[in-house]
Length: 186
Image (cartoon, rainbow, N blue to C red; front, side, top):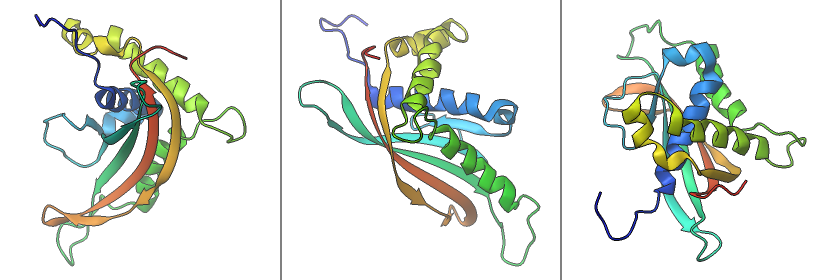
């Protein structure tokens, strides 16, 4: 890129990639059973998957370039395909565990729930590791992650199942506010 002014990192994109890297780690060996997707990932979504979308922000504090983003984490599982047909994929315990790992990962605390700084530290660790992980192309695509910092996380509520794409999918959504910046300040 030959611009006169260097681009600033896209904090929303950084949040999505860092949270996905952390969640992939949190799922451990089970991560191979799911797709982990960020908003600009153009692959076809095939349930079961985890998708992270940082979709709306405000600068907090003003003129800091720190941003408070609305972040949606969606877990989608295939539901009944047709009325009256059984679906061997429907397993409530597995579905609840699926979203339960997400909530557990986003709720790590080292001070009895006073805040989720421990979650932020893990998101920073796995997000920053993207800058040195994988092949040269992956490292280049994630070079902006070196100094990314997740500052704070707040849980903002849930959304449950809905019909989509002509079929019924079991969907669990967890909403968060995440304060983050492109500078290493932790």
